[in-house]
Length: 294
Image (cartoon, rainbow, N blue to C red; front, side, top):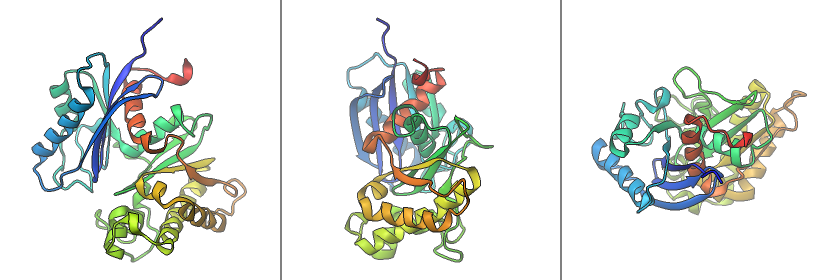
């Protein structure tokens, strides 16, 4: 029987860095994570990420590729990354640094695009041709599957719905604009506005965040003729049905075209494992592997 390929998956965000070994079937074999230390230098943060990866690897040696999902923006293939929620990394050469350290092929993509790929292969996106997957967590991002393909865009940042303006003249965003979805609905935005961590948000705040997400998503659905939008991340999953109901109510109000009316927002199928499975999928894709063809 042919051995399944195994990927070292790394998910890098503003709150945590996680790593896992993930089989070609999408099964998570090992997992390790640490908080993202925002007070250290670029090189020290990289060493932290490398340490998480090595903890996930343990004594294993039979893995074939490293796939990485990282917050954006970035240049194509993660040649350099400049996550808005990781101040230490500006034009950081993530792909090359990991490849030099791990001595295996490394593929890097935006974390929300990785999420979309993982959902298309193993999650709630299976069987869908046109959909978006979103992360609503420390930041907000998205990845697009259109005509059965993951969209890259000019520099690899296609789908970055966190910078769709939902409140003209609203809160200043880390990108420099005002009223972006990320400035109104991310975990950092919620904490700034309420003075409390997102986990302590009341139902009014959960509904407000859902409305903002629904507003941005409606624009994307109207623009791209999407069947479905899948949402994950600690805020979206943690805010539960109150969030989803408010998001879909806003969709009903704003998706009035025949092709967009009826499009819905639902949870990712892979739950909390979605970012790591997505990162693994980025690695498998770089090897020319598509589990859907097996």
